[in-house]
Length: 365
Ligand code: AMP
Image (tube, rainbow, N blue to C red):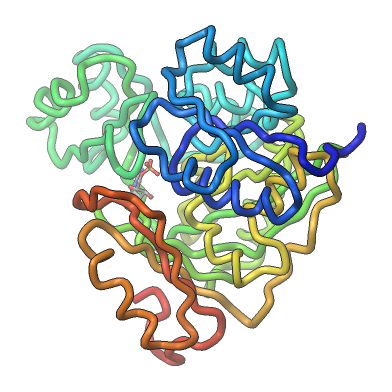
């Protein structure tokens, strides 16, 4: 397995901020990137050598894209699997289509993870209103009804606080391809971020504590404070088993709920992840550089922290208009994504601090 030579082109499916930060990391290693995305103005294309603006179902565009790149990766897991299969017949796709298929369907994902010894929150598949009523009897309330596919940032899910609310929640989510999850009274949420190389070597970042607001990640802190070492070890071992079982190549993020008796697997992202943005300054090798190294067949870098700890805060929606004020603090490391529309809740940028942040305060505030 040889590494991609300098000036080789890495194709990236998806044109958002993750693609943008991947493209910047690729450029540092001498690679060109080619973005494939349907969006009118993909921010990743601002920093890439080439852009194909086309729908993921456009086979002619996909075939042309495949001819112009040396390897394909993705920054967005809701790319149709057929598009990725089509590309995989023409050019290496890393991580592979199996990782994408598992991560695209919450039911498939939970069963896959259970098969590897992981424990998700109690759940039941829901295809009919009757299924939902039975599931509510078993799992109780509160519970969360989720779409199996296409959910992100708290979208595609509705909390159900009492049985009477079932019918409306079912209708809101379109009434099929759903899953009910018991609401777990977690102490905290954390993620395990790892990279797996083309040769099967692995690099593990320290566990990351995450705080969500309205289903959207607000803050991440590494290393996560207050977790039981045995629980971190169990979650880490599970993440490694997931990566190995998928013969995974690239960065993989697994999200967990921390409960008193151990971690519950929430979901995985077969890509670089928002909870790993702090690694740009806070780790010896950023998750973006790590992902590029993996898909290019290069050795992985050290995932060790550069300081004692790092904290990342997302800049959402209109907060971007005040973001430059953050630079009054000379230790703040600001990243803006160049998005034109500051829609409410939209991820516009993030700010990272390594070590120099208030001591004694609740670090996740
Ligand atoms: P998800 O898109 O499934 O990761 O959900 C987004 C966020 O909603 C999670 O990070 C949690 O903060 C919350 N959440 C989702 N599922 C559950 C659950 N079963 N119990 C408690 N909180 C949940």
